[in-house]
Image (cartoon, rainbow, N blue to C red; front, side, top):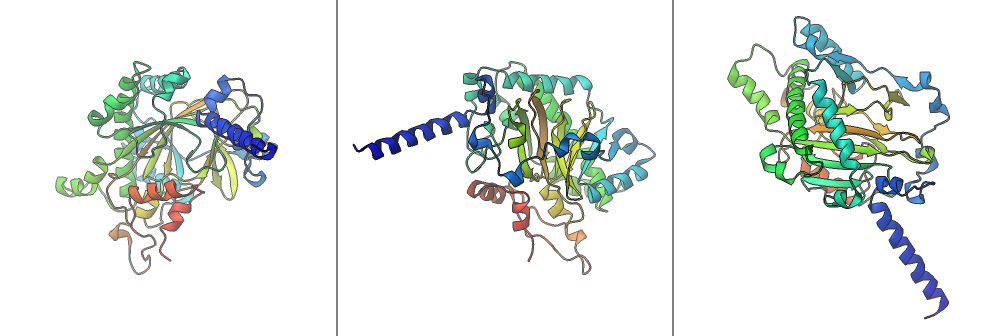
Length: 374
Protein backbone atom coordinates (compact mmCIF):
# COMPACT_ATOMS: atom_id res chain seq x y z
CA UNK A 1 0.00 0.00 0.00
CA UNK A 2 1.39 3.42 -0.96
CA UNK A 3 2.00 6.06 1.78
CA UNK A 4 -0.67 8.34 0.22
CA UNK A 5 -3.34 5.63 0.34
CA UNK A 6 -2.30 4.74 3.88
CA UNK A 7 -2.67 8.37 5.05
CA UNK A 8 -6.02 8.67 3.27
CA UNK A 9 -7.31 5.52 4.98
CA UNK A 10 -6.09 6.77 8.35
CA UNK A 11 -7.87 10.10 7.85
CA UNK A 12 -11.14 8.33 6.92
CA UNK A 13 -10.84 6.21 10.06
CA UNK A 14 -10.27 9.28 12.25
CA UNK A 15 -13.23 11.09 10.63
CA UNK A 16 -15.43 8.04 11.19
CA UNK A 17 -14.36 7.81 14.83
CA UNK A 18 -15.06 11.52 15.33
CA UNK A 19 -18.48 11.19 13.70
CA UNK A 20 -19.34 8.27 15.98
CA UNK A 21 -18.25 10.33 18.97
CA UNK A 22 -20.54 13.21 17.97
CA UNK A 23 -23.47 10.82 17.45
CA UNK A 24 -23.25 10.04 21.18
CA UNK A 25 -24.32 13.59 21.97
CA UNK A 26 -23.01 16.64 23.77
CA UNK A 27 -23.78 15.33 27.24
CA UNK A 28 -21.28 12.56 26.49
CA UNK A 29 -18.72 15.13 25.31
CA UNK A 30 -19.25 17.20 28.47
CA UNK A 31 -18.91 14.14 30.71
CA UNK A 32 -15.58 13.40 29.06
CA UNK A 33 -14.23 16.85 29.94
CA UNK A 34 -14.09 18.42 26.49
CA UNK A 35 -12.23 21.76 26.56
CA UNK A 36 -12.85 23.04 23.03
CA UNK A 37 -15.86 22.94 20.73
CA UNK A 38 -15.20 20.39 17.94
CA UNK A 39 -15.34 21.71 14.38
CA UNK A 40 -18.57 19.78 13.77
CA UNK A 41 -20.34 22.17 16.20
CA UNK A 42 -18.83 25.44 15.00
CA UNK A 43 -21.38 27.50 13.08
CA UNK A 44 -20.45 29.81 10.18
CA UNK A 45 -19.61 33.29 11.47
CA UNK A 46 -22.89 34.94 10.27
CA UNK A 47 -24.92 32.28 12.13
CA UNK A 48 -23.08 32.49 15.45
CA UNK A 49 -24.55 34.35 18.41
CA UNK A 50 -23.00 37.77 18.90
CA UNK A 51 -22.10 37.20 22.55
CA UNK A 52 -20.41 40.58 22.89
CA UNK A 53 -23.58 42.47 22.00
CA UNK A 54 -25.78 40.03 23.87
CA UNK A 55 -23.87 40.63 27.10
CA UNK A 56 -25.83 43.90 27.39
CA UNK A 57 -28.83 42.27 29.04
CA UNK A 58 -31.03 45.37 29.16
CA UNK A 59 -30.78 45.80 25.40
CA UNK A 60 -31.47 42.21 24.38
CA UNK A 61 -34.20 40.95 26.73
CA UNK A 62 -37.86 40.89 25.79
CA UNK A 63 -40.91 40.86 28.02
CA UNK A 64 -43.42 38.68 26.26
CA UNK A 65 -47.14 39.33 26.74
CA UNK A 66 -48.36 37.53 29.86
CA UNK A 67 -51.74 35.80 29.73
CA UNK A 68 -53.27 35.22 33.16
CA UNK A 69 -55.16 31.99 32.63
CA UNK A 70 -57.33 32.51 35.72
CA UNK A 71 -58.48 35.84 34.25
CA UNK A 72 -59.17 34.12 30.93
CA UNK A 73 -61.59 31.80 32.71
CA UNK A 74 -63.31 34.66 34.59
CA UNK A 75 -65.45 37.74 33.91
CA UNK A 76 -62.53 39.56 32.21
CA UNK A 77 -62.34 36.95 29.42
CA UNK A 78 -63.10 39.41 26.61
CA UNK A 79 -60.27 41.72 27.68
CA UNK A 80 -57.83 38.82 28.03
CA UNK A 81 -58.88 37.57 24.57
CA UNK A 82 -57.86 40.95 23.13
CA UNK A 83 -54.44 40.58 24.78
CA UNK A 84 -54.17 37.04 23.44
CA UNK A 85 -55.05 38.20 19.91
CA UNK A 86 -52.39 40.90 20.08
CA UNK A 87 -49.80 38.41 21.36
CA UNK A 88 -50.55 35.96 18.52
CA UNK A 89 -50.51 38.66 15.84
CA UNK A 90 -47.55 40.75 17.00
CA UNK A 91 -45.24 38.32 18.80
CA UNK A 92 -46.20 34.72 17.98
CA UNK A 93 -45.23 34.03 21.61
CA UNK A 94 -46.71 34.65 25.05
CA UNK A 95 -46.29 33.42 28.61
CA UNK A 96 -49.10 31.80 30.59
CA UNK A 97 -49.37 32.15 34.36
CA UNK A 98 -51.97 30.88 36.85
CA UNK A 99 -52.60 27.98 34.48
CA UNK A 100 -53.70 25.49 37.15
CA UNK A 101 -50.93 22.91 36.70
CA UNK A 102 -49.56 22.28 40.21
CA UNK A 103 -46.06 23.49 41.05
CA UNK A 104 -45.23 19.98 42.27
CA UNK A 105 -46.01 18.52 38.83
CA UNK A 106 -43.81 21.11 37.14
CA UNK A 107 -40.86 20.63 39.50
CA UNK A 108 -41.20 16.82 39.35
CA UNK A 109 -41.18 16.83 35.55
CA UNK A 110 -38.12 19.09 35.36
CA UNK A 111 -36.34 17.01 37.99
CA UNK A 112 -37.00 13.62 36.39
CA UNK A 113 -35.82 14.90 32.99
CA UNK A 114 -32.60 16.18 34.56
CA UNK A 115 -32.09 12.76 36.15
CA UNK A 116 -32.64 11.03 32.81
CA UNK A 117 -29.85 13.04 31.19
CA UNK A 118 -27.62 12.25 34.20
CA UNK A 119 -28.02 8.49 33.67
CA UNK A 120 -24.93 6.55 32.53
CA UNK A 121 -24.48 6.87 28.78
CA UNK A 122 -25.13 3.15 28.19
CA UNK A 123 -28.57 3.54 29.78
CA UNK A 124 -29.45 6.55 27.60
CA UNK A 125 -28.06 4.74 24.56
CA UNK A 126 -30.90 2.18 24.75
CA UNK A 127 -33.26 4.83 23.41
CA UNK A 128 -30.96 6.47 20.85
CA UNK A 129 -32.38 6.46 17.33
CA UNK A 130 -32.16 8.47 14.13
CA UNK A 131 -35.66 7.31 13.07
CA UNK A 132 -37.76 10.49 13.14
CA UNK A 133 -40.95 8.39 13.29
CA UNK A 134 -39.91 6.46 16.42
CA UNK A 135 -42.38 6.90 19.32
CA UNK A 136 -39.43 7.18 21.73
CA UNK A 137 -36.21 8.77 20.56
CA UNK A 138 -33.06 9.88 22.34
CA UNK A 139 -30.86 11.93 20.06
CA UNK A 140 -28.61 14.90 19.62
CA UNK A 141 -28.40 18.16 17.64
CA UNK A 142 -31.50 19.25 15.65
CA UNK A 143 -31.65 16.68 12.88
CA UNK A 144 -28.49 14.60 13.25
CA UNK A 145 -29.19 12.82 9.95
CA UNK A 146 -28.88 16.03 7.93
CA UNK A 147 -27.27 18.75 10.07
CA UNK A 148 -24.10 20.14 8.55
CA UNK A 149 -23.30 21.86 11.84
CA UNK A 150 -24.34 20.01 14.97
CA UNK A 151 -26.16 21.86 17.76
CA UNK A 152 -25.11 21.76 21.41
CA UNK A 153 -28.21 19.84 22.46
CA UNK A 154 -29.37 16.36 23.43
CA UNK A 155 -33.04 15.45 23.59
CA UNK A 156 -35.57 12.81 24.55
CA UNK A 157 -38.74 12.75 22.44
CA UNK A 158 -41.86 10.93 23.61
CA UNK A 159 -45.06 10.51 21.61
CA UNK A 160 -47.75 11.08 24.24
CA UNK A 161 -51.11 10.28 22.72
CA UNK A 162 -52.83 8.03 23.37
CA UNK A 163 -50.86 7.34 26.56
CA UNK A 164 -51.98 3.68 27.02
CA UNK A 165 -50.51 2.86 23.58
CA UNK A 166 -47.08 4.35 24.24
CA UNK A 167 -46.46 4.29 28.00
CA UNK A 168 -44.74 0.88 27.99
CA UNK A 169 -42.31 2.14 25.33
CA UNK A 170 -41.11 5.10 27.42
CA UNK A 171 -37.83 4.79 29.37
CA UNK A 172 -38.11 2.71 32.52
CA UNK A 173 -35.27 4.63 34.14
CA UNK A 174 -35.45 6.77 36.18
CA UNK A 175 -38.12 4.53 37.60
CA UNK A 176 -40.54 7.42 38.23
CA UNK A 177 -40.19 8.94 34.74
CA UNK A 178 -43.24 7.22 33.29
CA UNK A 179 -45.52 8.29 36.14
CA UNK A 180 -44.40 11.92 36.14
CA UNK A 181 -44.35 12.22 32.34
CA UNK A 182 -47.81 10.65 31.96
CA UNK A 183 -49.35 12.99 34.56
CA UNK A 184 -47.59 16.02 33.09
CA UNK A 185 -48.56 15.20 29.48
CA UNK A 186 -52.23 14.89 30.51
CA UNK A 187 -52.10 18.23 32.33
CA UNK A 188 -50.43 20.06 29.43
CA UNK A 189 -52.88 18.47 26.99
CA UNK A 190 -55.80 19.86 29.01
CA UNK A 191 -54.14 23.27 29.10
CA UNK A 192 -53.60 23.13 25.31
CA UNK A 193 -57.30 22.40 24.78
CA UNK A 194 -58.36 25.38 26.88
CA UNK A 195 -55.88 27.64 25.10
CA UNK A 196 -57.12 26.42 21.72
CA UNK A 197 -60.71 27.25 22.71
CA UNK A 198 -59.56 30.80 23.44
CA UNK A 199 -57.56 31.05 20.19
CA UNK A 200 -60.45 29.67 18.12
CA UNK A 201 -62.73 32.20 19.84
CA UNK A 202 -60.27 35.01 19.02
CA UNK A 203 -60.43 33.91 15.37
CA UNK A 204 -64.23 33.91 15.43
CA UNK A 205 -64.44 30.12 15.06
CA UNK A 206 -65.78 29.20 18.50
CA UNK A 207 -68.00 30.79 21.12
CA UNK A 208 -69.49 29.83 24.46
CA UNK A 209 -73.04 29.95 23.08
CA UNK A 210 -72.49 26.96 20.75
CA UNK A 211 -74.55 23.88 21.48
CA UNK A 212 -72.74 20.64 22.32
CA UNK A 213 -72.91 19.29 18.77
CA UNK A 214 -71.42 22.49 17.30
CA UNK A 215 -68.71 22.61 19.98
CA UNK A 216 -67.77 18.97 19.42
CA UNK A 217 -67.52 19.54 15.67
CA UNK A 218 -65.02 22.35 16.21
CA UNK A 219 -62.98 20.78 19.00
CA UNK A 220 -63.10 17.03 18.36
CA UNK A 221 -60.04 16.89 16.09
CA UNK A 222 -57.99 18.85 18.60
CA UNK A 223 -59.13 16.50 21.38
CA UNK A 224 -57.96 13.54 19.28
CA UNK A 225 -54.83 15.37 18.16
CA UNK A 226 -51.16 14.53 18.34
CA UNK A 227 -48.90 15.40 21.25
CA UNK A 228 -45.15 15.02 21.43
CA UNK A 229 -43.10 15.86 24.49
CA UNK A 230 -39.45 16.84 24.04
CA UNK A 231 -37.04 17.10 26.96
CA UNK A 232 -34.01 19.16 25.93
CA UNK A 233 -30.60 19.17 27.62
CA UNK A 234 -28.03 21.89 26.91
CA UNK A 235 -24.85 21.06 28.89
CA UNK A 236 -22.20 23.69 29.67
CA UNK A 237 -20.28 24.56 26.51
CA UNK A 238 -16.58 25.52 26.59
CA UNK A 239 -16.99 28.06 23.75
CA UNK A 240 -20.66 29.12 23.61
CA UNK A 241 -19.91 31.97 21.20
CA UNK A 242 -19.15 29.43 18.44
CA UNK A 243 -22.30 27.34 18.45
CA UNK A 244 -26.03 27.21 19.24
CA UNK A 245 -28.24 24.95 21.31
CA UNK A 246 -30.84 25.13 18.54
CA UNK A 247 -30.61 26.97 15.20
CA UNK A 248 -33.27 29.48 14.11
CA UNK A 249 -36.46 27.52 13.44
CA UNK A 250 -40.22 27.52 13.84
CA UNK A 251 -42.24 24.66 15.34
CA UNK A 252 -44.40 22.52 13.09
CA UNK A 253 -47.60 22.12 15.17
CA UNK A 254 -50.44 24.33 16.38
CA UNK A 255 -49.04 25.30 19.78
CA UNK A 256 -45.89 24.50 21.74
CA UNK A 257 -45.99 24.77 25.54
CA UNK A 258 -42.44 25.21 26.84
CA UNK A 259 -41.38 24.72 30.43
CA UNK A 260 -38.04 26.40 31.18
CA UNK A 261 -35.80 26.05 34.19
CA UNK A 262 -34.13 29.13 35.69
CA UNK A 263 -31.33 29.22 33.08
CA UNK A 264 -31.80 31.69 30.22
CA UNK A 265 -31.24 30.59 26.64
CA UNK A 266 -34.40 30.98 24.54
CA UNK A 267 -34.31 33.85 22.04
CA UNK A 268 -36.99 34.97 19.61
CA UNK A 269 -36.60 37.09 16.51
CA UNK A 270 -38.56 40.29 17.01
CA UNK A 271 -38.27 43.34 14.75
CA UNK A 272 -35.18 41.74 13.14
CA UNK A 273 -33.37 41.43 16.48
CA UNK A 274 -32.62 38.36 18.59
CA UNK A 275 -34.08 38.94 22.06
CA UNK A 276 -33.77 36.74 25.14
CA UNK A 277 -36.90 35.53 26.93
CA UNK A 278 -36.66 35.86 30.71
CA UNK A 279 -37.96 32.73 32.46
CA UNK A 280 -40.92 33.30 34.79
CA UNK A 281 -40.98 30.61 37.51
CA UNK A 282 -43.66 27.96 36.85
CA UNK A 283 -44.95 29.78 33.76
CA UNK A 284 -45.26 28.30 30.27
CA UNK A 285 -43.84 29.97 27.19
CA UNK A 286 -46.39 29.31 24.42
CA UNK A 287 -45.61 29.81 20.76
CA UNK A 288 -47.58 29.64 17.53
CA UNK A 289 -46.59 26.76 15.25
CA UNK A 290 -46.60 26.47 11.47
CA UNK A 291 -49.87 24.51 11.47
CA UNK A 292 -51.70 27.33 13.27
CA UNK A 293 -50.26 29.85 10.82
CA UNK A 294 -51.67 27.73 7.98
CA UNK A 295 -54.99 27.14 9.77
CA UNK A 296 -55.43 30.87 10.49
CA UNK A 297 -54.48 31.63 6.86
CA UNK A 298 -51.58 33.76 8.04
CA UNK A 299 -53.38 35.87 10.64
CA UNK A 300 -51.34 34.29 13.44
CA UNK A 301 -47.71 33.65 12.50
CA UNK A 302 -45.09 31.25 13.76
CA UNK A 303 -41.90 33.08 14.75
CA UNK A 304 -38.26 32.11 14.42
CA UNK A 305 -36.56 31.23 17.69
CA UNK A 306 -33.22 29.77 18.69
CA UNK A 307 -31.35 28.66 21.81
CA UNK A 308 -28.08 29.98 23.22
CA UNK A 309 -25.80 27.92 25.46
CA UNK A 310 -23.45 28.98 28.25
CA UNK A 311 -20.22 27.90 29.94
CA UNK A 312 -21.45 27.43 33.52
CA UNK A 313 -24.84 25.75 33.77
CA UNK A 314 -26.80 22.92 32.23
CA UNK A 315 -30.16 24.10 30.91
CA UNK A 316 -33.08 21.65 30.79
CA UNK A 317 -36.44 22.44 29.17
CA UNK A 318 -39.56 20.42 28.41
CA UNK A 319 -41.56 21.25 25.28
CA UNK A 320 -45.04 19.86 24.65
CA UNK A 321 -45.93 20.12 20.94
CA UNK A 322 -49.59 19.85 19.97
CA UNK A 323 -51.36 19.53 16.65
CA UNK A 324 -54.16 17.66 14.91
CA UNK A 325 -53.83 13.86 14.45
CA UNK A 326 -50.68 12.90 12.53
CA UNK A 327 -52.70 11.65 9.54
CA UNK A 328 -54.95 14.75 9.38
CA UNK A 329 -54.59 17.21 6.52
CA UNK A 330 -53.81 20.74 7.72
CA UNK A 331 -55.38 23.50 5.68
CA UNK A 332 -56.62 27.08 6.12
CA UNK A 333 -60.01 27.23 7.82
CA UNK A 334 -62.60 27.82 5.08
CA UNK A 335 -64.27 30.38 7.37
CA UNK A 336 -61.13 32.53 7.27
CA UNK A 337 -60.92 32.65 3.45
CA UNK A 338 -62.76 35.27 1.41
CA UNK A 339 -62.22 37.69 -1.49
CA UNK A 340 -60.30 40.10 0.70
CA UNK A 341 -58.27 37.32 2.33
CA UNK A 342 -57.64 34.63 -0.31
CA UNK A 343 -56.13 31.26 0.49
CA UNK A 344 -52.40 31.62 1.21
CA UNK A 345 -51.27 28.06 1.99
CA UNK A 346 -51.43 24.62 0.41
CA UNK A 347 -52.68 21.55 2.25
CA UNK A 348 -50.09 19.69 4.30
CA UNK A 349 -49.79 16.92 6.86
CA UNK A 350 -47.25 15.47 9.29
CA UNK A 351 -45.97 12.92 6.78
CA UNK A 352 -45.14 15.73 4.35
CA UNK A 353 -43.25 17.55 7.10
CA UNK A 354 -41.26 14.44 8.03
CA UNK A 355 -40.43 13.76 4.40
CA UNK A 356 -39.21 17.34 4.00
CA UNK A 357 -36.98 17.44 7.11
CA UNK A 358 -35.66 13.95 6.36
CA UNK A 359 -34.54 14.97 2.88
CA UNK A 360 -32.71 18.21 3.66
CA UNK A 361 -31.19 20.29 6.42
CA UNK A 362 -34.05 22.25 8.05
CA UNK A 363 -33.47 25.98 7.77
CA UNK A 364 -35.50 28.67 9.48
CA UNK A 365 -39.10 28.56 8.16
CA UNK A 366 -38.19 26.76 4.93
CA UNK A 367 -40.91 24.09 5.30
CA UNK A 368 -43.66 26.64 5.81
CA UNK A 369 -42.38 28.70 2.89
CA UNK A 370 -42.69 25.57 0.74
CA UNK A 371 -46.40 25.37 1.61
CA UNK A 372 -47.28 28.90 0.52
CA UNK A 373 -49.50 29.46 -2.51
CA UNK A 374 -47.47 31.22 -5.20
